[in-house]
Length: 497
Image 1 (cartoon, one colour):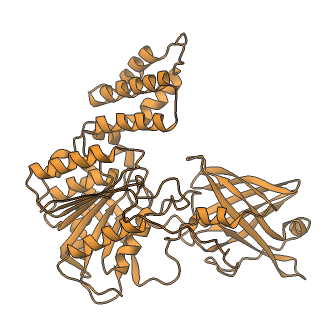
Image 2 (image 1 turned 30 degrees about the horizontal axis):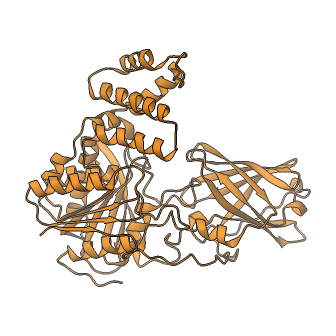
Image 3 (image 1 turned 90 degrees about the horizontal axis):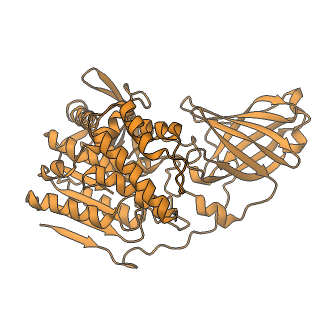
C-alpha cells in the first residue's frame, strides 16, 4: 500500500547541540611517523614549533575549511620535527606531513593518503603567519595559518562525526568488471561473516568522486556515499560503489556518457554482484541513487532483472529541462539578485536549454546565444562571447544534453518493486513538494503499491540540516529511515555484527 509521510516542523527532527570539540591528541595518526631534519630546515625550526590554526579556501566551492597544523620536536639533537595536520571536516584523525623541500622563508609539506595520492602544502612565512597553497588532484587552494587559537565551537561546527574511524566490522574490497569493452572499477563493503548478504548499489550525484574515501583529499571532500556504505554494512547490508566513467580506475569520460550509458554501467554492476560475488544474496539486491544517481537508478532497475528494491534521495521527477531551469531560478533566489538579473539569467538559461534539446551543434548554440545576449548597451549587463562560449561548453556536454532531453517519469512508471523516496523540504536545488508529487503520480499511475515517500522538514539536498552546526552531516533520523526500510525489504534478515 502507499505510505506518504510529510514530517511537520519539530516532529522527529530534534538534534542536540554539538558538544564542544576536544581536539584529538596528535598521536592519533593514520600515516605513520615522518621526520623532517635537514640543515636548510634549521632556521625555520624554531618558528614552526607548536600549533597553528587557520583555513583552506576551497577553489571550487569558495568554502573556508578549518585546519590545524602541529609541529612537535622528536629529536632535539638531530633537530627533527613531527608535523601533523588536523581537518575537522575530514573526521578526527591527525594526518602526518612530510617535509619535501625546505626553502628560504618557506617549505613544502607532503600529505599522503596511503592510497598513492599526494597533497602538497607550499608554505611561506609572512611575519607571524604562514600562507601558501594546498594542491590536490591538480587544483590549488589558498591557505592561511596563524598562532591565534580557534574557538572549539568553531571546530565542532565543521566536524563530520559520521566519518568512519578505527576498526570497522566489515571488509573492503576493490573489484573490477566491464560494460562491454569499457572497464569499470568499484569498491565493495561486505559485512564480516558467512553471508550471503543483501546488497545495495550506490549511485552518487553529479560531480562524483572515486569510491575510495576522499579523506584526506580536496578541502571539501565528498563523503556522503562512504557514510551510507558504512552505515549499511553495520546493519548487515553490503554495498557496491562504482568509480564513474573516467574517474578512479574506470575507463571512458564521464561528461561524454549519456544517462542511458550510466544506466548500462549500473546494470553491469548489478550483473557482477549476482554472477561473481558469492557473498551477495542475489535475491536481495537494491539500487540507491542520490540526485543525478536517483535519475539513473530507476532506469537501471527497469532494465535489470535482479533488482529487489529502489531507494531514491532527492530524485528529480519532472522533465529535466524544467528541473535545470528551476535550479537556476532557485540559485538566483538564494543569492538575492536583483529582479532584472534573475529574469535575464532565466532567459539565458532557458535559451541554452531549448537549443541543447535540439540537434544544434556547439558553434550554432554559441553563435545564436551570443547574438541574443551579448549586448553592451543593456543596462542590466550582458555576457561576453567568451563567457557565453564557456557557459555553452559547460552545459552542453553529451551527458547534460541527454539529461535535458530526458523525462524520468517513464522509468519511474516501469518500477514494479518496493520504492523508498526521501526528500528534504529545505532543498535549495529542487522543489521537494513538486518532485515528490510528480514521483508519487508516476508510481501511482503504474499501480505500484509498494512505495514509501518521506519529506523531511529543514533538511537539504543531501538530507543534511542546512544552516546549522551539523550542515555537512546526514540527519540521523533520515539515515535510520533509510536503513530500517532497506532491512525491512530484505526477506533474509541478517544479524548485526
